[in-house]
Length: 618
Image 1: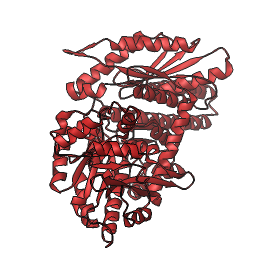
Image 2: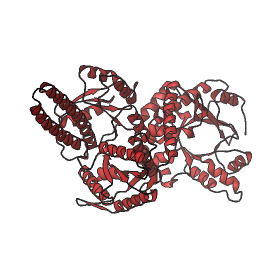
Image 3: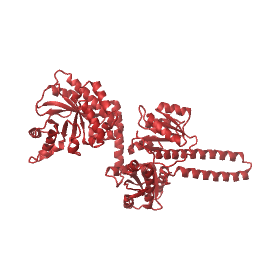
Image 4: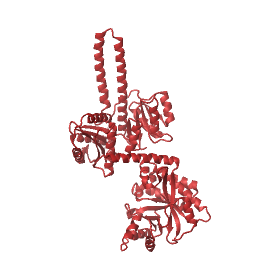
């Protein structure tokens, strides 16, 4: 987990001896979080796993639990469910802290009983404020309950002194109401911007939702706003400037709204707006446009001119919603769609978006179970040496043998795996499986000894600090000669963090492992970086072969790509060869290798072994 500095000024603590339990399997995270919370006056206890957390609660019940999601054995969702199922711990508020930033993770967190959700890397100020809010709410509830109990006891004891008891009762009720209002006001206010906070906003949404059920002519809408460049401001200008910017954004948002509208800071750089008594969606989109135009103007923060765009999700309120949280959830979903479409714009929620979100969440859950149940399998597609016409190697291609959907191709689940971090385990497993399979084939006396194995790796894997150690471990365990291994990377691997990636690629090269640029020509295709990185092969995307076949008079970019590879001392592979005409064309262009269904579709290991032993020639 990455932790950044806080967007905070000076926070005064009213925590007293309030007790917070932090559950996280990473000691560094526990240390940093406990240090932050201890500095503002909280008593902090730490637990690395469910067992330690359960023991801690048996000793003393905490006032609040901060719970990480991604933990071994039992994840945060299951831990929260266990707490809520236990009568002793069911009322303890749980705040989730996780690197999972997707709306579906937030939905799941609230569904299992969480009261709030903080995304990593988090802002210290955000953690402190959310912790304060939840503890204030809990204190308010306890205080109100105590006052009620005291009041009832006094009434019982002073029944005989009716007049005096009634007088004192009025005093107590007034005092309790004042205290309750004060506590609730503090608990429902954002400390930085002085705007209402998420809890207050949810309450207002609930009131609006109830009105739609009783007033047929009443309509409302929600705007979920997220700043697109706020982290850049924080990282470049500092967190004090970031705090000033949030305050300025809040003030400018208020100028775009009427006094009847409700503006709240939901957390971090997220804001929510409740628009009431709106006539139609055009009126709502007009307000969204006004907000976008207003925020597009620069902010003068200290001595800096700061520009920031926002993405806005719009949800039209209707009585079909059972809970106000669902209204906000769908507005959040629409906001993420606005970001995906280019940022600095608004997008209106429609039910299909929620269906797709649920479908993706179900796919993620199935994929997690697939890893546990070993449902993933590796297919192999031969790569043909055009000089000899024989099989020169194979590309390892992951497949998912789903228990109900059958064989699922990676195009349906790799993007979800990358978003959730499951891609690390998948890629590592495929790499190890492919290396082990090639070693098994090479041990067969009838199999040629010069075969190589190509494995695609996600760009995210190259940024892992233990990436090289994992490769070394796999080579050691499978006893494969690294010269027979080729790692296929995309142009995005090189273009992101190119200095660090270049160092990693050079170390891979020192291990005598070959490197292939996959899908060459579909991305940046800058010759400047091809000279700088230790690549052995360029793999030409199949889309260029299709264009070449459609226009026989113009061979397109394929000859140029092959020429680039040869001029740099690299080999060229043409993928997606489907027919003999394409094969003839790339042979004439002196391409080194070819891959495609003309030779063989991706197949399981035994089928490939039979193909090898048949010694085909093309």
